[in-house]
Length: 329
Ligand code: TYM
Image 1 (tube, rainbow, N blue to C red):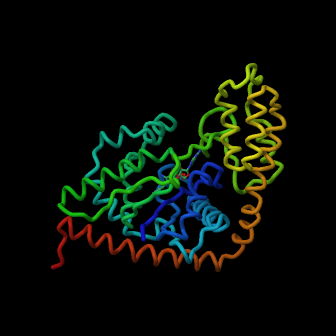
Image 2 (spheres, rainbow, N blue to C red):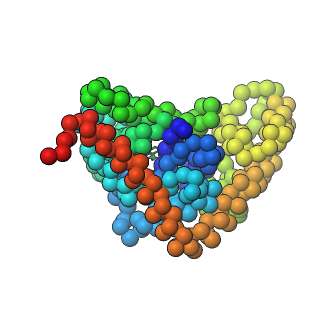
Image 3 (cartoon, helix red, strand yellow):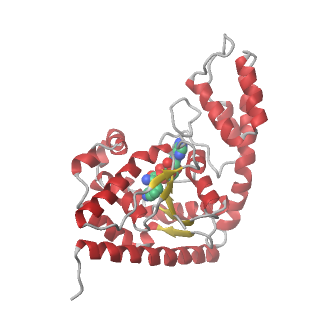
């Protein structure tokens, strides 16, 4: 059975970008593949979260994973820092990753631009840790959004380099995965491109109908089409992109037709979009509170996931150590 792996950083609640770019695919694929899904708490240390908030941030993602439908029985659901084998592989792979390559990644350049006061080397080697997450289970598919494409490329590069350097076949080259279609970039509603936590334009899984509706009704639009069948400007295309994720095909077609004959009313479109987002989010939101109240269950989930993940990770690490030349005395 092919191995699938993915993770999300614990930095607040999950937004629709996380859900449609990643989590929804995790849920779909767990019936047909051997899956590892984790909470990337080591990665989130790069931004220096406060120790007092840390545990709750991890718990938030765990509850949202479970509420969205991830199964601790079908998949291995674990916390990255519970699996020390990842950190050891990280050390081995760091020897094969070159400073210039890391400095050239788009995510690193972006972080340097946005937070010049905190350019720690954890940020620089972030893609190496991510490669370690993936390669430690020898994963073949990695369900992620478009923003992670370059990191996946580095994971492939490091897998190849390790195999070549040590003359072995320990690591397969992992592929990004989105059920045969292109990787997704879920847009924000403020015209700024992607929906993201640091962009401050998120619509969250744990958000009530009133607040979601308010955000959607405030979405940036233009003055409307003046010629039939004209191309849509980006802010309008963004609304349609979101609609394609949450609405029925007949609803989407209705508004496409209205756009094409210039009779579209953005207020109607937004009302429909808000209702369809609320209908997607509400059942997940309702499950989150019940799950969060059951600490005993959460403890069992985390222990089960840790044991499954460590067993798989230890087997890979033994192969990697052998390849590098570590021998027992
Ligand atoms: P993170 O925590 O920023 O995001 C988690 C997942 O959500 C996706 N995503 C989006 N997809 C589409 N449109 C958007 N607007 C959008 N915003 C976020 C991301 O692509 C990602 O799949 N480095 C990773 C976490 C990680 C990881 C890994 C992922 C660590 N190790 C190993 C896969 C495999 C990250 O920061 O994602």
